[in-house]
Structure formats: structure tokens, C-alpha cells
Image (cartoon, rainbow, N blue to C red; front, side, top):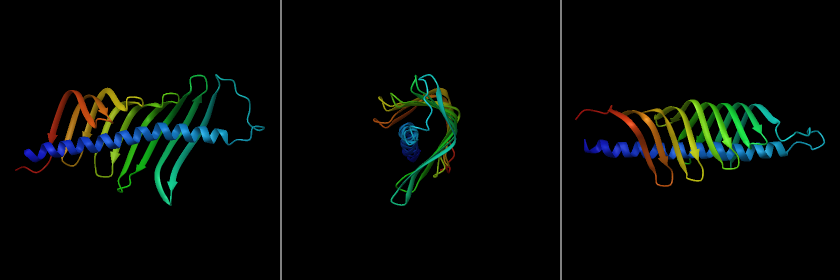
Length: 195
């Protein structure tokens, strides 16, 4: 059983990194790319919008490629930008992050909200994080606090991998301290070999 504790810590560490990278990536990349895309239009062709009027993009796909390698892809069915509140609302969001070591992390949700001033991000509705090394985290919402570098949810959470299944109520992930906590009603099932 001694090896099981190390594996659980490894699983927590892997998820912590993947969730952090994914959420930071979604917020920062959306903010930069949407801002740049909206600035590219010809000012003579761009209608004058009041500060309460939203701007809308449909079926978007952003890809960051450096030196011939794709680093991430972001897809959303719709993005709404609310000028006065400085908020981006996303529908049917999917982010794929390609790590330097060859892993692929996919984060998706029904809806997302990016607070452009604070760079905080919320994902809501069927939030799923899947890694190429067969870990999957499911919950109904995640909130990323950019200033605190912390990811939280008060919703039920499920984590499953090849050797472990974990369920609980709420999570708290400190990206700086590299701590992943399931807050309440934790149930863990080890699926590894008996011995």
C-alpha cells in the first residue's frame, strides 16, 4: 500500500499542473487574441459601438503555433464581449494544450466567462479536463483567481485515471503551492493491482 500514496500524490500533481495551465491559458489567450482581432478591423468600416453594446464572434478557433509546433488551440461556438463590464462570455468552449513533453490536455465546458480586468476565469456546465495519459476530471464549474493563482469549485467533482477513482464535494488547487485538495465527502477507490 506504500506505493499507492506516491501514486496519489503524482496524480494530484499532474492534475494541478494541467488544470492550472489550461485555465491560465484560456483566460490569457482569449483576452490577448480577442483584443488583437478586434483591433485589426479597418476603423472606417467598424461601426461605432456604445459602451453597453456587445461585440459577438461566432465559431471561432484560435491556434498558437511557434516554430512549426502547435502550443494550444481554442474553440468556442460564440464569444460575446461586454464593453462596460469588460467581460467575455463564451459558449461551447474547448481548449487543447500541447505540453513540451508531448502530453495533450483538453479542457471543455458549456459556458465560460473571462473577466478581462482581473484575468479571472469561470467555466460552467459539464466542465471536463482530460489528459492524454488517461486522467479525467469532471465537475459543473471551476473558478480561476488569477491574483491568487488558485482554482476552486464548490460543486461535486470526479477524478478518474487508470488506477484511481476519486469523488468529493468541492476542490481547491493552489498553483503556486502545488496543492490539490478535495474539500468534503472524499471517496477514493484504488483500481490498481492487488498485492
